[in-house]
Amino acid sequence: MRVKNIAPTEKTNAFTAKYSFSPHRIIGFIVLWGFLLSVVIFTIFPIVLAFLNSFKTNKEINLGETLLPKVWHLSNYIEAWQQANFSIFTWNSVYISIASTIGTLIVASLAAYAVDRIAFPGKKWFVFIQAATMFISIGAVVLRPQYDIMVSLGLNKSLWGVIIILIAGHATTFFLLLGFFRGVPKELDEAAMIDGCGYFKIYWRIILPLITPGLGVAGLFMFRQAWNEYILPLVFTMTTPELQPLTVGLANLRYGSSGDAAQMHLMLAGACISILPILIVYVFANKSFMQMSAGSLKG
Image (cartoon, rainbow, N blue to C red):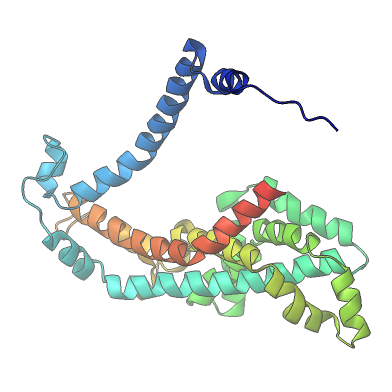
């Protein structure tokens, strides 16, 4: 078998043709990176601006003369923490978010496992109803019925009323985990059943460890949703201010004790504080998120 020898000049010409920067390619490169940089700037700039303004006085923010604060007022964070009872509101937000995340993962994963692995009457209708709740948004219309249900259960003055309603809206998490369950071979179930495992044991000991990246990503999304929820906790905690989460507590910083001046510097300081837990959760869930992204690209 003869091997065709390629002259060095031919290799050089091929490399030059492949990686040459023609005017059209240079223009496309500039346009692409210009678009990407503009998206990054428009995304990050409001966060940076809020962070810088959190160190300014209220008058300095309203005037808007300079981007950087003339004097860095670290006392804004201390004042915001004290005025808004951030220790209580932070605990309420953490409690709601963690309980909602754990409950949603349990309910959604069990539902996804049943739909993917077990044949039962009405399966298609169940999936249809789950999908319908994602595409039909009725918003505040359901707040009164939800509140009435929690009143009948005696949970209208408890954070568990908010937590149960958040867990009930698990359709997005359900479909996300359903995709991961379908990626696990059913031969593993059959082998486990031969060894005497039941459905729940297969779910708990075999399936869940294999979809850990999916659980991490779904947990991250659910934690963020629960942490940023505003209307639902506001309705349920109007008569119990000590149960308000951070999102509702931040709104209380809008006006000072006199009620005539918007405390923008305190609101921005409080908002910067409330961002920290989300960043911490993302750091811990980042590995799972990257694993899911790598798996989707590989697939």
